[in-house]
Image (cartoon, rainbow, N blue to C red; front, top):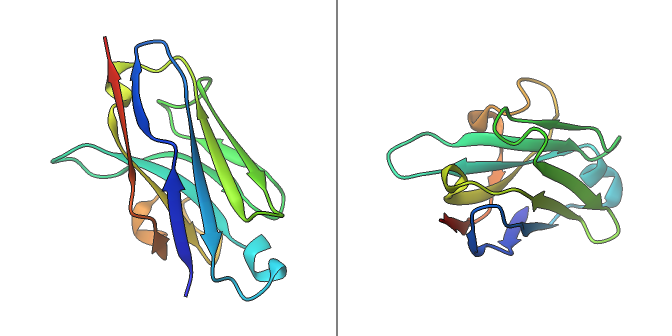
Length: 129
């Protein structure tokens, strides 16, 4: 059973930075893990989860949602089965619960939440003025 654990959320002022981590476990071997896509989604109450960015583990390729482009950066440490999201120049609109998600196949829309098989418990990011 795949298990995702997020960490690193917190409170920051506008213009500040935060780094989030997503540690994955339960993959049978590194080859299986390498075939996955791991993404971050943000969600505010009453709204759908919005794709922040996704990393294709095998190639390291990344793709970002419109609001994250140019400000957020994804990276990975495959030895630790961990994906990182560095969030810079944060805005109040970035305030949300951030979820890490993984899917066994990277086919399909990259930031379409229903396609993801596994989800973490979420970590709160609050940006204040």
